[in-house]
Structures are given as C-alpha cells and as structure tokens.
Image 1: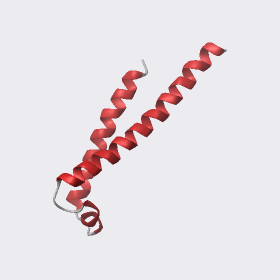
Image 2: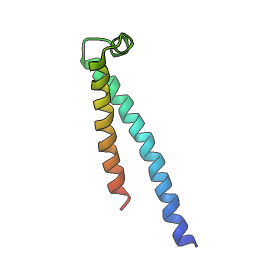
Image 3: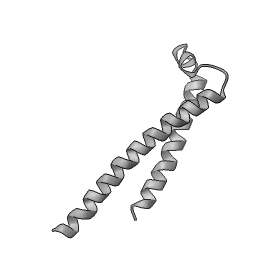
Length: 76
C-alpha cells in the first residue's frame, strides 16, 4: 500500500509546487516587461487596448508552457 501512495503524494506535491512556480514566474515576467515598455499596461488594458491584452496573453502562455514542460519532464 505504501508503494502506491508515496508516488501519488510526491506527484501532488510536484503539481502544487509547479503551479506556484508558474504563477510566480508569470507575475515576475509581467512586472519585468512592464518596466521595459514605456506605457502603463494596466491603463492600456483599462482603456480597451486589445493589442496589450494579446501581448500579456502571449507572455502568460509562453511562461506557462515552458514551466509545464519543465514540471512534466521532472515527473518521470
């Protein structure tokens, strides 16, 4: 029973840590990119600028895919 339970708990811990790391890197990537561009991302989103929304979406998808691959390959 213990042999089947330990990998399950370990995978749950990996998934929780991976989710936290993904959110952390998405937040960090958005903050770093916000300092690079010379306009306010929240103001542009509030005014309905869809190009800025798609740019942020691309950042989040890229970081999420990269972190997902790292976490997924670490489970083997």
